[in-house]
Picture 1 (cartoon, rainbow, N blue to C red):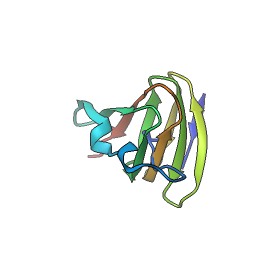
Picture 2 (cartoon, rainbow, N blue to C red):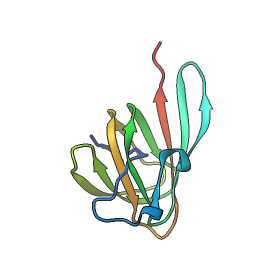
Picture 3 (cartoon, rainbow, N blue to C red):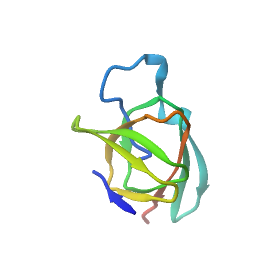
Picture 4 (tube, rainbow, N blue to C red):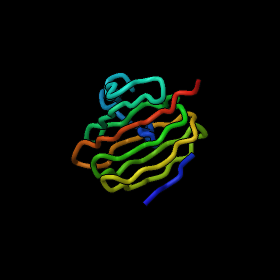
Length: 117
């Protein structure tokens, strides 16, 4: 099932109060997976019950490797609770977003960014 949001991912500020130690930065949770002249792919990990601070995400395809139950917060302050199954994907048109992993288990996703010439 494909969902369009305005993730990703992959998505990501808590829509309520958080403990500072529970906030991950994008650099702490993502690692480069593949890069060439056409795409950049990052593997992103969201620890259980951790949030990722609001940050800029370029237009990208987000593919969920594991199941996910997340609260996605958008740059305008609106938040939405969402669930994804492994293999589901969504297009992110770009912009600021944050997320909180609401699961007891880690969430893993791929953020695929097309590289324009």
